[in-house]
Image 1 (cartoon, rainbow, N blue to C red):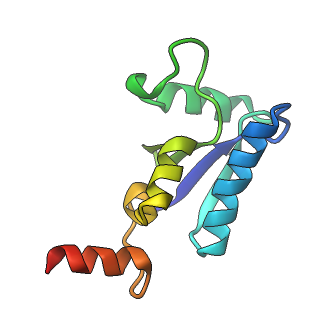
Image 2: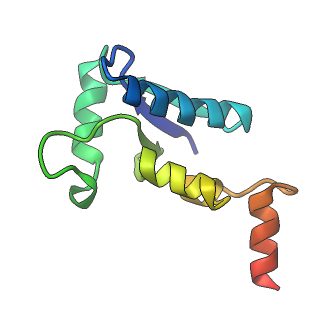
Length: 114
């Protein structure tokens, strides 16, 4: 399974840039494999992302903004959903991955199953 993060390499928004860096930095730091898909430099990536963000996850007006996170072609969420999962030690579940043994998330899951 491949995590795909749709980003905009040439975004004029510092907020979007910070959110993108936050997601990518977390994935890199935790050695979670991912593909970066640039919607600014590649029209196909932009079109695919816009078509595959579910209707109920889109903004009321305009298009969904990066970063948008997918596991293969399954939509996982935007930055806010990622941030919430990270705060709750549930990023692996959010991404649709199994938490590695010894991680805070795996320990929390083990406690829940007891």
